[in-house]
Image 1 (spheres, one colour):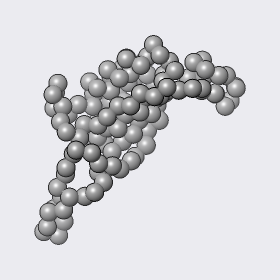
Image 2 (cartoon, rainbow, N blue to C red):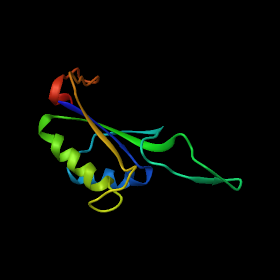
Image 3 (cartoon, helix red, strand yellow):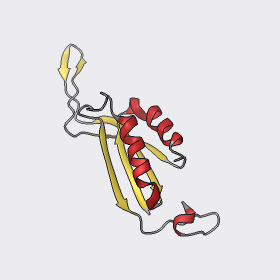
Image 4 (cartoon, helix red, strand yellow):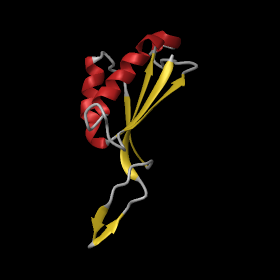
Length: 115
C-alpha cells in the first residue's frame, strides 16, 4: 500500500479530479494549503508589485494498493500540467510514501481491503 500526496495548482483541481475518476480512483482527500517552491508570482497591491511568501495550492491525498500507484500518478501528471507536455514552474509535486496500515473504522477491516 502507498500514500500518494500531490500538491497542485488550485485551478487544476477539477481537471485532476476528473482524470482520477476516469482512472477509477474515487477515494481521495482534498485540502487547501499554502506554500512556495520555485514558482514566483507577482501581485499588484495598492500600486506596488508584491511577491507573496506563500501561494495557495491544493493537496490531494490518496491511499492506494500497489497495483494502482502508476495509474494514479499518471492520471495526476496528465491532468495537472498547465502547458502541455512540458509543464510550467509551479505545477506541483507528487510524493509517494509507504503506507504501513489502513483500518476502516466502520468495520475494523485492515490492509488493502480497507482502502
